[in-house]
Amino acid sequence: MTETTPVTESADTQLSIGFSMSEEKAVAPPPFLELSGVSKSFGEGAARSEVLSEIDLSVREGEFLAIVGFSGSGKTTLINLIAGLVEADEGTIELDGKPIAGPGPDRGVVFQSYALLPWLTVMENVQLAVDSVFRNASKADREARARSYVEMVGLGAAHWKYPRELSGGMRQRVSVARGLAMDPKILLLDEPLSALDALTRATLQTEIEQIWAADKKTVVLITNDVDEAILLADRIIPLRPGPRASLGPIFDVPLERPRDRTAVNDDPHFRKIRNEITHYLMAVSRQAARASSRSRVRKPDVKPLDLRPRSLPSAR
Ligand SMILES: Nc1ncnc2c1ncn2[C@@H]1O[C@H](COP(=O)(O)OP(=O)(O)OP(=O)(O)O)[C@@H](O)[C@H]1O
Ligand SMILES: [Mg+2]
Image (cartoon, rainbow, N blue to C red; front, side, top):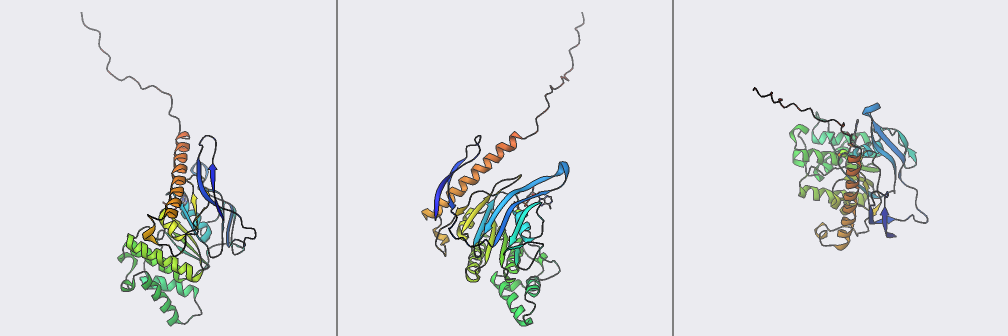
């Protein structure tokens, strides 16, 4: 069940927005992925930057969750924490009831920076990931699996190319193929489609949704595209702008699937959710800008020297 609830923030900002908020179910299944009180900083002393603060997040098994946020707010840091590539300063992260201790094949990550091995071809990059997970499968089965995912992302004809021979969008597709081919319990997608043209982006969005639906995967998608989040996700959570970014309210997306992308501009439900999220993001962005201008270093109270040449006393 959902309801519209006003959000009121600190008195000086008076941020008040309606949004759809999840109610706790009477008998909720235990969360599959759970982050409690997670904080992360980088650097020491004066160079220390507090990126994430007090992150609480529960993701149900089989859920498609999208996190939307501003550039530099800490989205990749959040994905790296769940992937086990970065360690939290405070708080706990559990997957399927077990604390996360380093990376593992149960989490498939599609990195924002592609992270392909430059000395391997498209096919070999995907094959390596498949081989590491499906060790007991026959060579022919592993090859067939890798090939099917390379073809799925439209790179069948380029399977022999090296990453340096690919465009940014093609590299991103290899990264998507590799993440999906590993058949992980949870897919962590860090802006996986951001470098793609609209048509390829739409095709891969559909593929990702189909794989999620067919394999009942749990997906955490990072995106800066609110429409993409609404097309794909069950719930959307904004990450507020940093420093000390924290998660905002939960926006449910109770739209039927498969969702029709051609109807997104006309469907009143879609438009309502988009308006609510966009207004929320704009409000927290203005709030962060005000906080940042208040905390700017005060200029020293000095008067400029008058360096103009003094007029000489006139000769009499
Ligand atoms: N290893 C690191 N060492 C120091 N600072 C880091 C490190 N990783 C991230 N940061 C800082 O943390 C902040 C958040 O970075 P992050 O990459 O998580 O943001 P993001 O939301 O993913 O941004 P974008 O949308 O541009 O990808 C930035 O200020 C960044 O400089
Ligand atoms: Mg990022």
